[in-house]
Image (cartoon, rainbow, N blue to C red; front, side):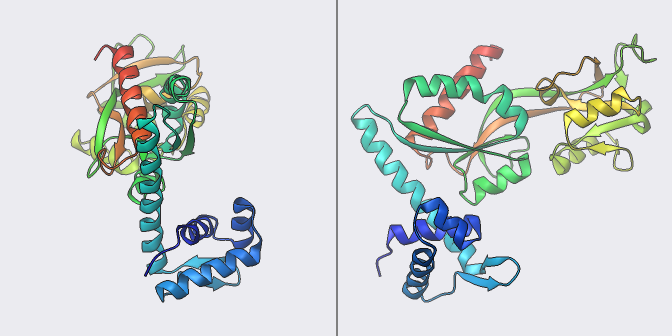
Length: 294
């Protein structure tokens, strides 16, 4: 049995939108054409890929979710084939799908994208933003080829880009202004913790130092943390990399014990990503090596 790649492309659009009308708009075809194509694919595979729901529209079946991952792999392979061929003619093209969390998007991507576009103007870059845990899921599901995330990198192959550390932030006239280092053990009940979607990893790090901030005030963004600190609701606890992506005007203090993490780029396997994606990873790694002198 041969699988029609066009059928898979329509299926992927419907699976990502979970709405036939929206998928039709994205593909610039009619709604009946989308429904007909999905039915043809289901008949060819002899499985149901979607179930219909009155409130949610369409929902992927269990086998539909598995087929979606494989379809994305096939799309990625097709993209790699064209990129390998275009590389031979010195004209790299195709699409790079990148997942990134906002601070990394602001601090690491602009320079790399500018340099990459100058060298490879025919390559499209598709950026999806979320938190690290989401991005790791996207990489696993092949929704993106590469992801910029915070450690731990667990089962993924990775290149480390930035060594990061946690800091405390306070108003300029805070009682700890003249203190060299903020002791987390002593002031842990005064802390406002910026989790930012890295809960599991950060809790693990803090527990290694016998610190538990679960019962205290926690926020999800650096912007919210800054507002809380300005209102004197506590001492802000955040990673320096995240803090450097926003303006704040607050006093920054090192903390003890020292808590570190890495920011890196991950993939299921760098041997399997497209030539354009691999070139982008190399360029980004070169940028950070040059910036930080690693």
